Length: 97
Image (cartoon, rainbow, N blue to C red; front, side, top):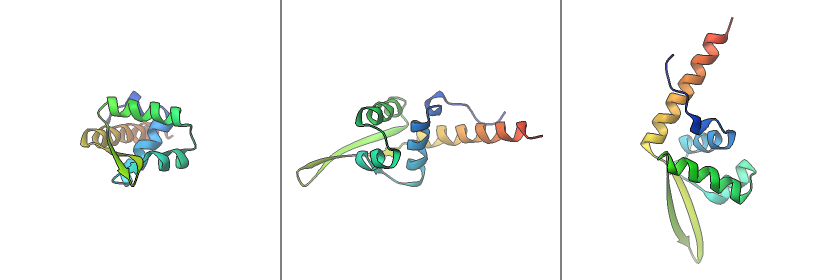
């Protein structure tokens, strides 16, 4: 079967995070929180997981006096996500009768 199943994306929050980052160059923490409707701790845990996998990178900065954390997908993350989507597409095609 073409593509690879990736356990990093088996959680719906991580799957949605990568989906967002595939169509946005970067996305900030508060925007993720609002769009995904998750708690700070839950979101931070999933973002950290993807960062530890090397799939996203974190950039911390200040806007005025307020800290802002932006996330973007790495090339490795984009490739892994694309392989995971190919796996899912092929799985669906195989199970159609």
